[in-house]
Length: 116
Length: 114
Image (cartoon, rainbow over the protein chains, first blue to last red):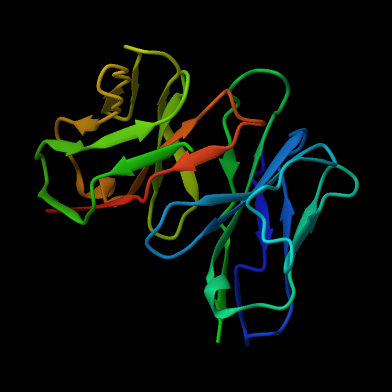
């Protein structure tokens, strides 16, 4: 079974530029998560989708970050414009979803963003 | 809000030494608790979990027991190997929150020397 795919793996941009990340979850997984992991810290949830609807985006800086999952499968996360403090690894995860209180989240390899 | 606190690293051990990585949490209700591991160059992987008080999660020789009275979920292994060198994250899911969002601790880097 293929895992969660993310691209690109690395991205270097200058501040005020825009950047987009792509995630393809495990086939059949209804729930998709984007986490931000700043160096030396644990991942922090940015947004959670259930199919193509948003479940939780309370920690997404909506003035510069946006995310979509139009067909309930792939997802893109965009930053426009980027700031220095956005330098981090952006992790995508997916799970089966549903009403069970816990479903294992499977993580992709992440995209390492450096903002200069 | 919910939070997870784990001991700062790096933790450096010799092969076959005993490992303990402390983890405590703050959350309302009855969260599920997890340990994730991140090997060099790889993504986060679930190592073990416990979903109710006094449950013991175990995998690959690692164990952790859900202690509600001390709000702790310490990770232990009796004899570490060089291949266990990685960053370990303690995390929780609070069923009172919308969705199944993971709240992570800051991570503890383990270095095992031959």
